[in-house]
Length: 148
Image (cartoon, rainbow, N blue to C red; front, side, top):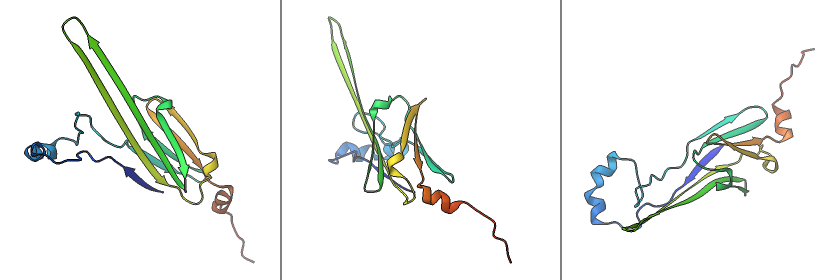
C-alpha cells in the first residue's frame, strides 16, 4: 500500500527575515507563521490474511473532526480543527485563534473491499480497518497437495 502526504506550503512569499533565521530553522522543527508545528500524523499499517489495519496518531481530536473518503481507489484521511480563545477585562482584550489541518492519502491495493472500510477513534488513535475481498482471502489460503 502506497502512502502520500499532502502538505501546505509554509511560506508563500520569501522574506529577509526567513533568510536571517534560516540557520535556526534547520535546527528547530518546521513551523508556520503563527508558531504552530505543521506535521502529518504518524501512521502504522498492518496486514494479515483478512485485512489491512491503519492506525493514525491524532491526539486531542474528536471523531467528528475527521473526514474519511474513498475515491478512485484512494483513501483520504483529513482533519481540520479550529480553536478560539477570548480573554478580556477592563484593561485589555485578547483573542487567539488556532487552525490546524492534515491530509493523508493511501493508494488502495486491488484486493481491498472499499465498500466495507470501518473507522473508530479512541484514546487519540484513529483506527481504520480495510477488509480484503473474499476472493483475495480465498486465494491466500494454503492447502496441501498430495503426489500420486
